[in-house]
Amino acid sequence: MTVSIILAGKGREVVTIEPSASLASAVGLLAEKRIGALLILGAGRRIVGILSERDIVRALAERGAGALEEPVSQAMTRKDTDHVWPVLEAAFREFGLPHRLRSDNGPPFASCGAGGLSQLSVKMIKAGVMPERIVPGKPQQNGRLERLHLTLLQDTANPPAPTWRAQLERLRNFQCLYNEERPHEALGNDTPAEHYATSPRRFDGILREPNYGPDHAVRRVRHNGEIRWHGNTIYISGALIGEPIGLIESEDGGWSVHYGPIALGVIAHGDDRLRKPKKARGRVENPRGFPTSPPAQQQQQKP
Image (cartoon, rainbow, N blue to C red; front, side, top):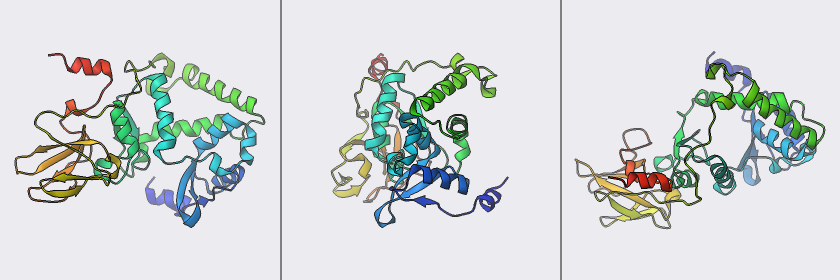
């Protein structure tokens, strides 16, 4: 099946809804259009959030069937760091730190700026977690997660339970079935519980700045996203305001710029502009620049 065939079946229309619309009307719209998410448009037709199937399931789990009468604004995903970081931080404290966190290329996990960094991904790096992004336009690279969302919705909220208590019971039963009883082909027909272990990398709640070696020049990004460099003012990124970036001279006399393990770009000799790196945005050969948890830092310091 090709993209053109999928679009021919689903259409090219971008489906939106207002924040004040009821969650029940959003569910009806999703079913009518056979889609999994809606854009939420506020004043001036500005995007203020997204409502996905997972948001609906979460609202039903927390507040029962009565959530369907609430406005979409109560359930939608707000794509900003202030709302998302506390959720990530709580997960890190409970389950430990992953080495990587995979996401698509949209906010709040990524941006179009230098290195694809957003304020949220900067916090992740300072916590010791490497942002990992799928290739743009390749949602199948997150196929397992998308499939889980569909299964969760079908098994627990289609239709929703009549009461909060009944909905919560459905979710608990699903959690037990999915993790401890249902075999998974990708795991050799084992259950996830047979393989899962919490991360040994514990999160102490401290966000640490990246480390840079003596061969790096370090500049702290100013309040307007710029640095002063060789007499010039060069814009880096608004996501890095207040953060230290490292610059290391290359063979051609230019300077490679990075934030911890993330390549931001290149400043050519005599240039006053940060240009995108030739290779894909991501990690650079700077393992010491990655902030880690205290035990891992101690291991790095050993001779």
